[in-house]
Amino acid sequence: QECRYYISSLAEVNACNFMNVVRQHWGIENKLHWVLDVAFREDESRVRNGHSAENLALLRHIALNLLKQEKTAKVGTQIKRQKAGWDNNYLAKVLFG
Image (tube, rainbow, N blue to C red):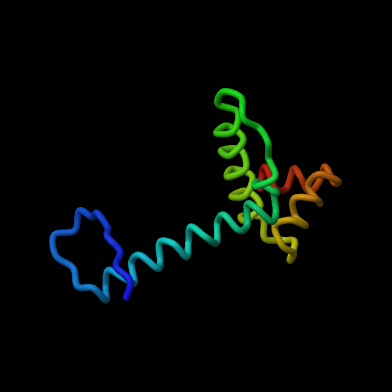
């Protein structure tokens, strides 16, 4: 048997509903981090000085959102990122829609 403790502002909730909320939260969280790690190799980043790690994480999130909004290329995020780096016309399409 395993026991986990959570802090919540919910007044009343049953265990089944709470389990679904927690699983949904971590599913979204894991999916985002997986994409950032695969497409941007975020885990390999060794930036540590000052606020640079936070600033780069923010830029990665912005780039990821822009790449997700671009629908003309039917490829994954990593390929879209590479394509934007190689092709200035595609980069403009990603940035300006």
